[in-house]
Length: 336
Image 1 (tube, rainbow, N blue to C red):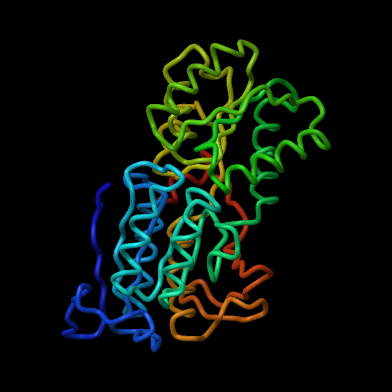
Image 2 (tube, helix red, strand yellow; image 1 turned 135 degrees about the vertical axis):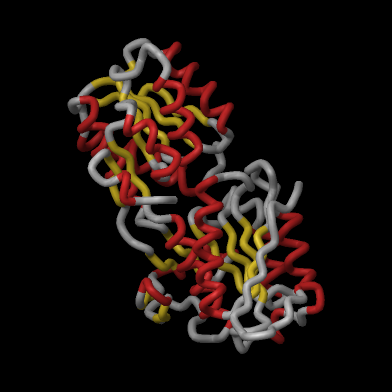
């Protein structure tokens, strides 16, 4: 394990940054200066999470929070546990976590909450009992539908497709895949899902899985990858192979990762939300929990800076919005 970076942002003039000297989480209940928040992505070195942390840093600057990013090198089910335990021992006011597994980190989160730390999940949820708020990038139904809509358009509505996911335990990918399977059966009878492969959100593993999929399924017409690491790796492989122009690649990616593949014709279109906005909203939700504006109960509202007002839904879910489609006509307008 290692720490990628530590970011402390305090807007009060002359404020001292002293994370090791901060008080317990209960002492931070007033919000603002002195409140410490730990950002815990699935793994470090992932451009998607680097962008979400940048959004959280922006919010921290506006709110006067001290924000620290920590995380494991690999996204295994229990790799986040030591970081949760350390944050709780340090008495941080809030943890903002993208869960590698819905239950594997549950006991650690329970201990942190018992010590007074608020828990916000974002991007990938735990079981609801283990956190206060889940900041969801989009509804699972919306994400699944958009990816199937894109691949159907790109392969002419029929043929074999494969899914290249992250880890087999990833909460969000598994929810989307389950919905895609159901929608394929009901709405896309001429599209056949021939395999679900897992690249573990590792670039080389995802690249190799793409090669294996194309070897195993010579009639494959498309690959859907609902993970930013996977879709970029798949596009990279296809872009220099005999399959360019023959096998469609789409899924969830960032513009900076996918730009060259859109511009060279490997990828027609892909989708995502703005992960910077997701991190920004998660930090505002954490602050609202710490200062008592919200508790996580349905119907509560809070302000999230430039994004406006949000309402807590059932099971403590806060929704960012709908997926956005990037293609050659607009990808030049974005930089993340």
